[in-house]
Amino acid sequence: MTRILITGAGGFVGQALVRRLLAGVDALPLTQLVAVDLALDLPAHPKLTQLRGSVADAAVRAQALAEPPDVVFHLAAITSGQAEREFELGLTVNLRGTLELFEDLRRQHDATGKAARLVQTSSIGVFGLPLPPHIDDATPIVPTMSYGAHKRMLEILLADYSRRGWIDGRSPRLPSVVARPGLPNGALSAFASDLIRELAAGRSYESPVDAEGTLWLLSLPACVDALIHAATLDSERLPATRAWTLPSLHVSVAEVVAALMRRFGVEVSQRLSYAPDPAIIPQFARWPTVDTALARSLGFRADASLDELIERCLPGAA
Image 1: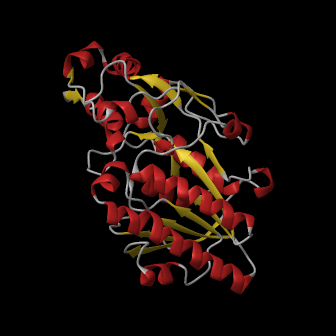
Image 2: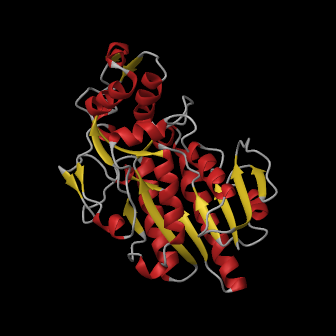
């Protein structure tokens, strides 16, 4: 049986992951699930403990780790736009809080002789500007935003803790996961979710990205599948870096709109207008072609098609 800790459990991905694990996953038979976030409103469950607070708070971590977890999903983060605006907050949560979590897990390893399996969500934000014409597993990683820099530093640190045997770490890099609810989360890439969500709901939408914009998209259910798969992989199969880019769909905004029109009718295009934002487009809407051979060799898969992704984006799909 498995004791699981999820940080950032009140977020878009975190809530879906909690629901999936509580519903039962054969590869991760659940004994207890501890969910941590600043705000939590998860349904009560006999195997679920909810802790409200920040992973950067030592007292919160002490509560969360009172019983050593077998698996940790570390999702808590200050994302792209907010990390740029509020540097100290990003540093505190993304780096200091995560480093202290690693140290807590190292001390538990020293006390028990057992290394927790930790899935840390990294991001394609580790790739900086100018983006190359193609990205693969050998592409140099030079972040050009604080959030991407934080994620890259944590990838390196987790690989070192794993090399030493203190943590059994994995850092899958997430693309844009859609379709997030219409709540502010500080991510400059949120327009991808807004585009799908608003047009699917029959509302008008003014896109900050032109029709030629290119995106890497993954549906929420596919993302949850990937995180669970990452937690169940034998460490012997993992690269020394413990990091890889997840497969996703490389699509244009025009292709997304066409898929929405196939599902919801041609009037979708009549509710869409464009107001391109030059502050967003270069980093978030000019993604090149990508080859994720390493992740695919480990068994990770993207949504089968854009039509399937749109279907899985609808409310209740996860």
